[in-house]
Amino acid sequence: MPCIGGLCKLDGGAAASCGELMKKPTHSSPDAGMPSGGHHGHGPDPVVEEAIGRQLRKLYDEVASEPVPDRFAELLRQLEQQDGKG
Amino acid sequence: MAVSQELRDGLIGNIPSLRAFAYSLCGNATRADDLVQETMVKAWANFSSFQEGTNLRAWLFTILRNEFYSQMRKKGREVEDADGMIAERQAVIGNQESHIELEELKQALNKLPDDQREAIILVGASGMAYEEAAAICGVAVGTMKSRVSRARKRLAEMLQRDEFELAV
Image (tube, rainbow over all chains, first blue to last red; front, side):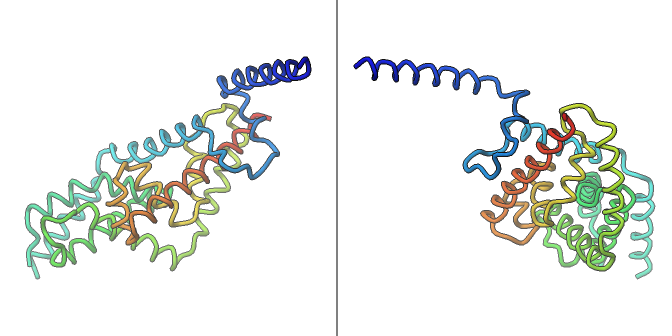
């Protein structure tokens, strides 16, 4: 019985510290992802994923919100003129 | 046959997103605008085959996409690779921060397989629905979903590693 009691305490302790670690993933993540390689079910860091999503939209939106360069208005005029002749 | 006012306006209205799509695909502003120009010329010449009332944006994106790949087959990708190397050096020297820089993202995008790159640009960057992106790329919706998810994973792996290397 004392043995089992001891194990229980150990388990409890380990679980508690594990829980603590998982609550603060931020700056320790480079260590966590270091050489262990090819771990299953361990998806990408959600913080990194979110940053990627944000930057992807930024990359796209920055260009999409630029004023349209004059060359395209000129191009449309040419296309319409062609039609007029055809 | 003359192009209807509605199609003409639709084409003009889609220029900003065509430019954004082109730039995200090729990472080069001049080449992106050349791609858009080529797309507009092709669209204009083929408007008679467009079914009015269907999705004009998807139709235009499909033309741009096809143009991009056919140019890539012809020219190869030497220019982009050279650009990528310069950007890589700058990132290593200049960036001490742990957030993801736009330049790093562009490099990482450039390293993705073509099918994954276009998938993550259409869905992740432009915010398009899986269905529309699948139609543009001519694949099933399920295929599009799995390409997007693989692209997300690959990007995260590449950028997470960069972050680690830079922090050392």
